[in-house]
Amino acid sequence: MPNSSSIRHFLLLALADTRQLQLLHFCLLLGISLAALLGNGLIISAVACGHHLHTPMFFFLLNLALTDLGSICTTIPKAMHNSLWDTRTISYTGCAAQLFFFLFFISAELYLLTVMCYDRYVSICKPLHYGTLLGSRACAHMAAAAWASAFLNALMHTGNTFSLPLCHGNALSQFFCEIPQILKLSCSHSNVRELGLMSVSACLGFGCFVFIVFSYVQIFRAVLRIPSEQGRHKAFSTCLPHLVVVTVFLSTVMFAYLKPPSMSSPSLDLVLSVLYSVVPPALNPLIYSLRNQELKAALWRLVIGWLQKR
Image (cartoon, rainbow, N blue to C red; front, side, top):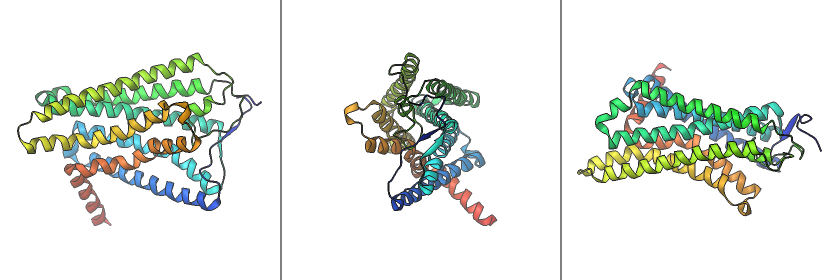
């Protein structure tokens, strides 16, 4: 059997067997990627150009849009290339780079969603301390901590995964490079380092999950105490997009990685991976813009200004 030193490329999972379906998958992936690029690009431009949007909530939303752009640009282009040219290969270094950036952006998204939850908590439960707890310096520090933690997490996992000896071929049962699929090729069935890193990442992820749940319990209790119906509606409107994004992201990731082995199948794994790696970057801009009047107005002004210049 080949070892890791002799492997020059990996074989990714083919999305379809027939040429017609391959071209259909290419068109679908192209449409999703263009929607994600357009939506997130508009949000980044609107927040960056709109001075009235230079608030903590929109600052973190800009960072979230950056993670969505990075995530969609990490997995989709190679899948589109393979579908268009009827190939399955990805180089060894390309696989390592794809794994690193995928982990980096996915981890950053989780940490940023947690920080955004804290922003909503302070805004609703401690409004008088909002300017103190979420000043420009504090926001910059929290965003930097999220990006730095994601970088370290991705670096440790990628370095450890590709330091393992691989002797079970080079075919991955996924359309992009992912840790569980690469570990299936390892000669070692129990790796202490990887189990340790997985445990640390799982604890961090569970901590973020508990923090988000606890924060929203406090938020809902505070909102229900607001006397006016208009006030309750406004408070719920600011939280609803974030809650929807968090629910979609966490539910698909948790089900994909924590489901029982008896439920695992190539088709189910493929569907789940698409749900948490491809769909959120395209849907997040739509979810946030539908419920936020300030963002919709800024996006409209941005589009009108661009059309007038043309």
